[in-house]
Image 1 (cartoon, helix red, strand yellow):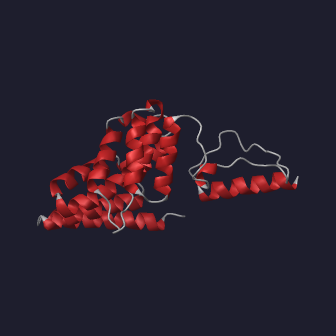
Image 2: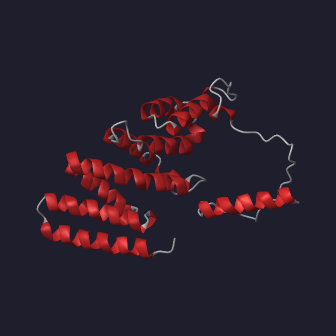
Image 3: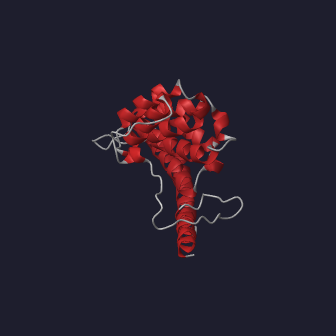
Length: 219
């Protein structure tokens, strides 16, 4: 009985930390004995463990390890090889691609080309953001990648930055108030640089309004 209560408490704790996780038909109670062994992903702790499942699984594990180690190049390299082997896992591979592309290097910088490539990969299969099991995480990662890309492009390629900001407007309903505030802020800065002061003021006001909505929302 104590083990059942502990598991229910742990599940409740996870749901509090991750409110986007949904449970379709309630929580299933599982009994676990104190001396029962529980399987764990050994590859996370043992670099010598042999992976089962073939080259695709090995590449996905390699990419995940690189992602956890914040090794952008290693992660992207493994995923490029995985694309040709795991078409059925495409949504999950491109999700990892976006996450890896958003990693910063040792100097604390992100790569605009890596972000652009990951974004383009998902946009070539935009249906994955409309239906399927990966819709929510893909939308979140896509929005985050576009925001990072807009920030990078605003420093070096303003024309491309406007295109990226337009994409963010097209998925405005997917964005949080904080993300909308960020998109308007970058638009305002671009307008200011281009000496379009009227537009800059409008974007700044929109950014402030969205920021206030985000801060006023219960957390």
